[in-house]
Length: 323
Picture 1 (cartoon, rainbow, N blue to C red):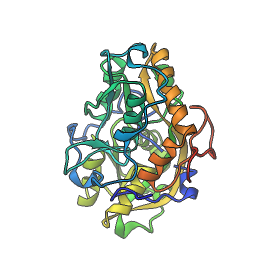
Picture 2 (cartoon, rainbow, N blue to C red):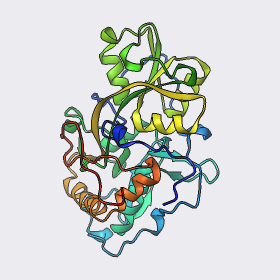
Picture 3 (tube, helix red, strand yellow):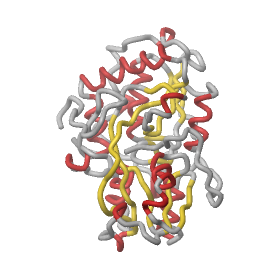
Picture 4 (cartoon, rainbow, N blue to C red):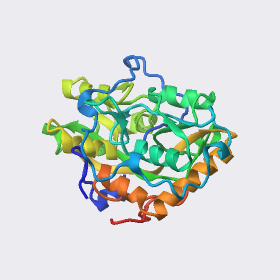
């Protein structure tokens, strides 16, 4: 299978311990020096458009489990409104050539909408606004690779996991031999506002011993700051970091991957029926190999998919498919 022009070939050993966006606190941690939120990612962070073998728009919808009118609780009848940052590749990014939103979670959403008989809409918002808008009922789904922590489950519903990930240090290429999370002493560290990677840094400040922390609205802003030397290291989702390092010679990853956890789609509390209808499709995608095809397309290999949002590491269940 041909893959997109920009992908990261994640080895299975890494895939067994890979992470996602979102913090244990559903409100963004306060970062007084953080730049203003923006919707558009840097062009260098978006996957390139290619004639990829997997085409989500052409996915087979003949076995759709429910017609659009039968999906309960939709914000707008006939539509599946999925909020996305467009700034978290390879999960979601804006293609600089076409302006289209694409990525791993976007392809899943496209297939799900198609099989449910719904029109897909992808309003772009930053991650904090994505969760706030979801809680207010503005969107059907928040998609940007969210960790369903116990705390988050008090505020949101979650789909069954669609992959797993972890945290890793993103650094400049010349620092690839640094110890990463094993030693942050004296470093200026950055991360994405409202993310679980940010929460880990802020919650463990005394133990980690870094000098300062800066939060950024999205991956594009954070990576630019790293290249400019405004921060020495980013606390980063491992799939995003490995993808970035594989496609940008100025950047690398360093040290161990830590804190493996599931990633899911988020729904507003009280919308169990809508979440369950989505889970029917997601389970079918795992069973018929569609999810495996999408993973290979964006990650270069299959990534473990836990059976439950509260599953403990290590994760060993791979989606069905040619992996």
